[in-house]
Length: 263
View 1 (spheres, rainbow, N blue to C red):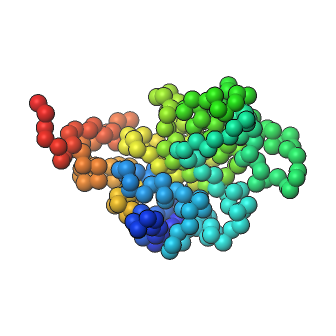
View 2: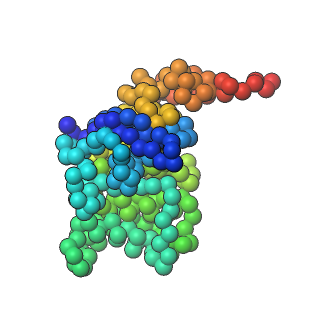
View 3: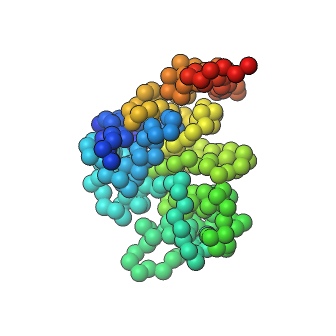
């Protein structure tokens, strides 16, 4: 199969089942949005796919290869993960952080090549981080850190890109630019999976959506088929109307369904 596939993924921590028998597909050449309320298991699922966490049961495969059978170096060449949290990189510039993304492609003790430098510069440009590439990472705003993280992931030249809340800390212009970049990367053939909170971002930019709640898959399919008023009410406990805008669903939110109405 082309793209990502998981089967029966299970992961528990602290006596709580966080991911419970999850099976999803994410086609190559497409953007798959993983949606769900807080605590649904979205971030944990991405970290299981990336190998940051180890599932207690189940299978994860990409383009027909079971990922747990790959070496760490092979995984790093295939998969890049952009997490919400900022990993402190004291004393490094943004460009130096992005250069770390080239390590899986370099030989032991090998110096960066001109090709590596070209990839780094292109990644900085595409992620919108070129203008602050020479600044110390400690001086960055939250949005700048997010774009630096994305540039580092692009420098890995992955075949599978995982993004956990890629619009976090970004202003509206930067949010839309980042989501358009994910669409462009998918058009180039990447498998792109993004955990998102904004349902309208998913409706506009994703080809495929997976809805998680309480660690299980509640729905999966195209945005138009999945993001219905019934699904929004059942999963997010909010009333909603779904209208069509530019050929895509647009969700107009109403009232919380479990709260008294305030006139």
